Length: 240
Image (cartoon, rainbow, N blue to C red; front, side):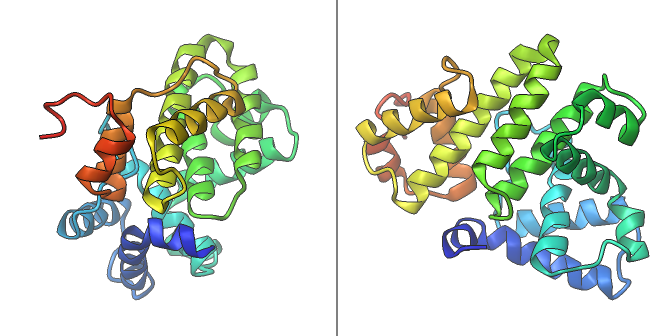
């Protein structure tokens, strides 16, 4: 994980490391306990889960971050019984994502791993796994987008939802760029945003300044004055 990744996600990585110490010491034994502790730690540290507008099952989704910090950051073995007991869903998402990345048939992989190819929440949980792996620096953007593209092609009936996910992805990446100082003004913001629209394969999926503002302020805690300069279209009521 490079320094920029560590700096952007430092607080949540540290919270996850503390939870792993309890997991490995046998202080936590169920998924429900882990999820509740993750929520408690995030609230105490004023950390916002990685999300767009929806908060549905958000801390269950955020367990992906905890799993990745443990396995890819700390080197926790996926052979440990505690890992298999608590993170069965994340392990399935991981297997599915990498099999698709390696070229296996998308629908056949979902059917093989999950027993179904049609549950949309499973599809988007797998995408979130790949996205989080990329955000934490363990996967390239190109690798993530190649899997995203293949899943989009396989499930054409979900195109509108994929467009929404693309909008979320672009807003998140733009938030990172603002937080790290790579995007400094509104012109750079527009160029960065539209380049990502083309990369993700949804040219008309540019997120609003309001969405970028909300995500950048809550997830990356960027200063209000800086956001106003870069995101001039935000509603005045939001900038109060």
